[in-house]
Length: 353
Image (cartoon, rainbow, N blue to C red):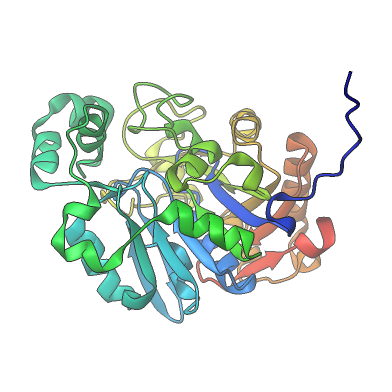
């Protein structure tokens, strides 16, 4: 019988891995764009990747006095040295993407995977005419659901077939894995929210694919062992656009009274609102394997928290709320947003990790 000697296995590639995945913990609208834009600057991220479905999700970034409503470009664009990538698992609307490239001035640092799926006009037209999708399910009418259905049927056109996109075509999986081997910092930006997952959400009132952290890895083409941290983003209250259950939903008048009325980035519809839901949050942490929490809109729940940059200066009610979250969820709240702009953040990672 051969003897197997005890061996020591180092991290893949022989170095450290710095891959962070950011996901939404509720029904979308959690403020992922704000958190990603902050991390891109604060951590000086080398590569920023937008995973998820495609242009049916909008991320809003307030940076240097401007508002950016992004449906395709990664929110990491705020760091002017960050490489930006759209992977194979994401759908692309070429018209929207080219408009965002121009708005963000990221021409020379954007790559699109050759196998990213393409949304065409007939996909959008189909969804606009489908009463099942628009009235029953609450589709955003962006063409994503039908495009993903065509992908499953092996009929969908790919990015490499679109002449306007050819200057941007790359192999995202190969590029990202090479960046990991080179000890570069990678930030993967999920879209929508955990409970809009096709598999784990409130079916049938869900999107057309999975939205959890593991799905983000599959979109990009990286294995789960490559991920260092999963930051789950929770808003200080819960909102949902369109149809489907929302536990604890407030009346429109009560939501307005509390200042929780919001308008969706993509559809322009009013978001339904409910108080923070600890049971949903616990489930989302389990589904995503989350390691830390980013909490947004604390300044809406507690107006005196607006623009505060250190934890001890927060009003006592806000501190108690955060402590309750940590006690219930059993993972640390490390990033706290106290306003819409990128820099309006309390960052406790250095203290808690």
